[in-house]
Length: 362
Image 1 (cartoon, rainbow, N blue to C red):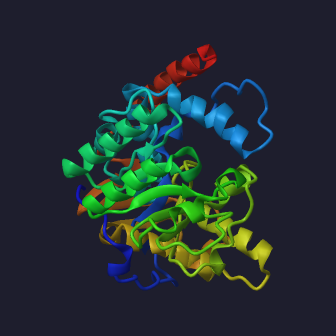
Image 2: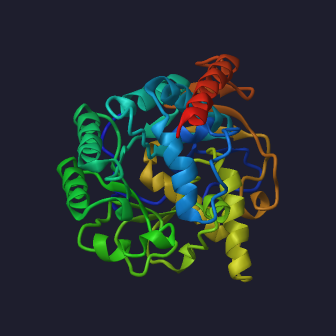
């Protein structure tokens, strides 16, 4: 489960999974996740109620990432990987940030996912929010992980939290490793200049996440995260109007890709009443171009009509059995490699410690 991420332009698009009476699909792919957010549920309220997206970042997520340590990261990743597996997702493209625990953090995530039996592509989100030294440390972590054979991208938080020098360094590092950059782009109005600043840097192997307010075409795969965009009230990205390959992510709201597909469809339909579930399903299928190994995985579902028109209106579909790389890692809805009860108990302990750190944070 290591190695350089493939160029999506060089991977043949899979044909649509068989519908009709088929209970089986390949493994699902979450094209943008934040496994470190798995323990955020139930976290203490922010110091005040955020009134916009930038305040959501400042008062919630940027406080959370500062409180992370390697032990919390481990149990957050294990819980997130377990929930992914239980949802039929066998491959995760993760974007991580932990400014007070940078070194070794990508190894911790990769090992946690491997223990559960889920494939993962890792990236550390470089940013200048913590000064140039913090940005350099993030670049070093990406370089170290990729140089050691880890499967991943070079992560960047977003253009609006990075200097031009940092953006150029990240793009150069990705090119050196023959991989792309995994970056949030124009998610909110604070990042309106991202298109201009990235136009000369972006390449076809980049993951351009969100693109809600992107004012121009950029090369790369756009990763659409409809639930997160709605939750943060940043607007609708209208991915159907883009010329890019479009894939689906969750932005850290679990890894249940059938749920994300349904939301992607109804959000598209709200914007265009002629939209059909087939478009959102094509975004789901695009994950296999980013993580083609998942095509060799098998998920047996509790429902016998695994086609877009049926699934768009059918909730509660569960993964019963999952095979990854020839090994059955979920049987009768339960993981075979790990004890789900133990992971949830240990994750709860880590969450309690995380919450205490947040409560003590100024």
